[in-house]
Length: 525
Image 1 (cartoon, rainbow, N blue to C red):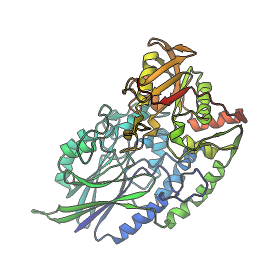
Image 2: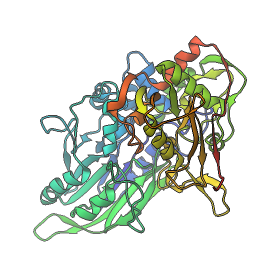
Image 3: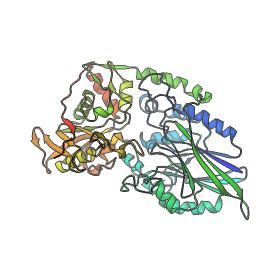
C-alpha cells in the first residue's frame, strides 16, 4: 500500500498569481494554482492521501490585509471560505497567523474546515492555545498520526495588538520527544508537520544560522527524535525534497509556488498494522497549473473588491519616489526611503528612524500614490515602536545591519550570501535617518561603521536616543539582540501601511527629498 502526503505552506493569502505590484499580473504561483495540483494528486493517488497546510495562510498579502484590516467589520470568513475549497486533513499554526491578534485568529479557526493541530503553543493550564495536540486519522485501514508544531518565531508576535500574554511556548524538539514515542505505539505512521525550517545545512550539517532564538529546529528534531516517518516543514520559504536521517522531508516554497509530496510504501507489520518500507519526497511546481474552478468562483468578488481598493489614489508627488533597483537603493538612499523615515519620525516623535526595503519586488511610489504602492512596498502589517536606546545600542544595531554586505573575489560590494540563502532576508538590513554614517565593507564585521554623527557631533556610547522602528525589530526580531521589549517607551499598533495612508491623506502633495545621510563604501584602511 502507498500513503501519499501532500502539503502547502506559507501561502500568505496569495490566492491569485500576482504580487500586486501591477494589476492582473499572472505569475508562477498562487493558491488558485496549488489547489488544482492538490486535486489532481489526490485523484491520481493509488492509496490513501493525507493533505496538510503547514501554516502562514492568514496574513502576508494585500488581499489578506484587506480582509483583516480594511473591510468593516474585520471578518476572516471571505478568506477562510476560499481555503475551505481544498480538502485539508490538518492545519498547522504559522507565526504570521498571529499578525492580527488572537481574537481574529480564533474567528478564522472557527470558520475553517481544517482541524488545527498544535502541540507546543499552550495556555496557562498547559492546554493547546488553539486546536488539538495531534490528530489520528484512519484511512483504508492505516492509522496515521499527525503532530503539529510551530516555530519559536511566533514569540515575536506576543507584542502585537490583541495577542494574549498567556502564551507558553515549548520547543518543537522537546514536544516531539514527548509525543512521538507515544504516537508510534498507537498509529502505523507518524507525520510531524512543523511550521519551521532547518538551522543546519542539509549537505554538511554545519550551522547556517544562530541557535540563540531557536527559530528553526528541524535538523535537531530529526537527529534526536526517532520514530518520525515523514516531516513537513515551512517558514523558510525554501523548496526542499530530500531525506534527512532516513526521514523524507518536504518544504513547498511560498505563495503556492509548489506542493510538497511524500509517498510512503507500507507493508504489513508483524502483529498487525503497517510499517514504512520505503519513501520518496518531491516538490511539484505549480507554475503551469490551471486555475482551480472552486477557488476561482469563491474568490472572484473579493479579488475585484481588493483591486478597486488598491487603485485608490491618496496623494500627488512633487518629484520622484520611485527607484529601479532595490539593491542599489540599499546602498544609496532614495527619496522613497527618506519618505518612509519621515512618516515614522513624525508619527513617533523620534530622534532617529530605522526601516528596510523588505524585498526586491517593490520599486517605490508612483504618481499618484495609491494603496497598491503602499501595500507592495510595505508588505508587513507591523505597527511602530519608540525605543529608548543609548549610543552603544545604536552602534551595535548599525554593525548588525552592516553584515548585509560582503565583497566578491574581485572586491565588488555584494550581498552577504547569508541574507539570501537558505532564505531571503533582505528585511534584516535596516537603513537609518536622523544620523549620518558610513558602512565600510572593507573592514571586518563589527568594525564597519564609520563617521557616525548625530546633529553634526560624534555619537557617544552613553548618549540617549528615541528610535522609531517597526515592532518586530523593536522586540529583537532578526537577531537584533540590542533591542528588546523592555526598552520600548511608546507604541502605535496601527499597521504601518495604514499610518502611511493616513499621513498621505493629511499631506495630499508630497515633496520628494533625499539627504544621502549614509553611504556604503569599500575603502581598505
